[in-house]
Image 1 (spheres, one colour):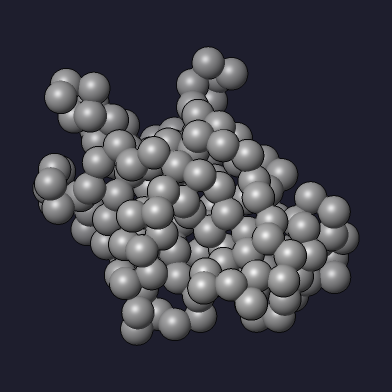
Image 2 (spheres, rainbow, N blue to C red):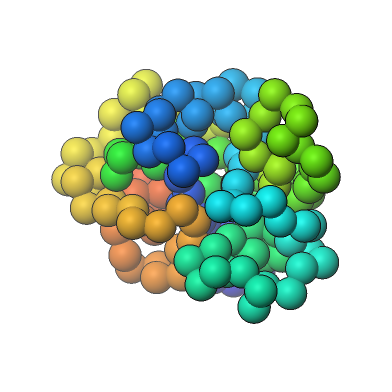
Length: 159
């Protein structure tokens, strides 16, 4: 992508409780954030040596180090699109968060651009959006995630 285009991401929002995926997704978006948690309590992702994390959790580090304000994130739950959001703030880490009534210590503030249930988009795109990991940048500009986000952004701009 060129510097002038927003970076696209896709992400699932839930702790290690997939049976409550939609609950946690809606809760996060209602409070205006997207977030991550780890199997064990971690430190600030900007300060941690990512090689000390389990391999599947090393993929979470770009959430802090590469995601930026203005980036667009497709929020998924159970392989289904839920919302399209724009990152509006910096990465935040809450030390000792387990003492607070939140499930994620690593988060970013977002603005919800739209909910899939309100748009409904084109079903053939949504059917191709298989999400097997928690988060990832969308680098393939010809792939189904990129095309789906572009179509959804077109709809958002036309509103």
